[in-house]
Image 1 (tube, rainbow, N blue to C red):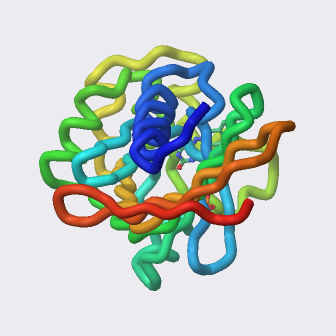
Image 2 (cartoon, protein in one colour):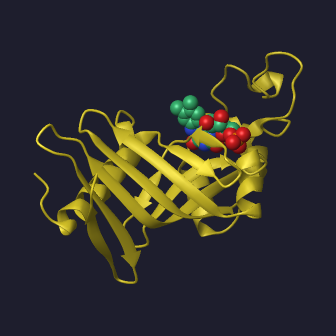
Length: 194
Ligand SMILES: Cc1cc2nc3c(=O)[nH]c(=O)nc-3n(C[C@H](O)[C@H](O)[C@H](O)COP(=O)(O)O)c2cc1C
């Protein structure tokens, strides 16, 4: 049973790190909200506990990137039904197409993953018929590095620096809720009525 704020902070850290690493983790695919009111599922790629930053991958042309450039407020919601733990996060998003983080993320992606960014029109463009958006030659193949090189222009990382974590644990014996506020070199936290 979690009894202290430090245990809550440790639980958040381990769940988010596991969520980023393990495809089958319930926290692998949180819901990401932008200030324009839109929500979408995204794959969590990394949680850096030093900077309290979440990393996602996306198409730089997608509406979510435009929304974040207008207003960087981002919320992220994850729920592990088996553990009965909800983690709500609020923070500031930034989209980076270039620089060391985007470059490393691109290099660490498989060519199959990179293929998604070959779409000829921006995500959300009207299509008129059911389409993948990929060029015909790229459908149904595992592309080579050369095949996916042009996709690099469309690839970006979305980094969300979390400013508040809201942790809720459901239990028959009584729910528990706490919030954690990252601060330079650490965090503060307090218990809330669930
Ligand atoms: C399981 C799952 C994982 C997804 N992962 C991502 C992702 O990592 N990055 C991404 O941009 N979109 C991802 N999507 C698609 C988004 O939910 C969304 O449909 C798309 O990015 C367009 O969002 P936008 O119009 O708000 O920009 C995923 C969807 C599902 C169902």
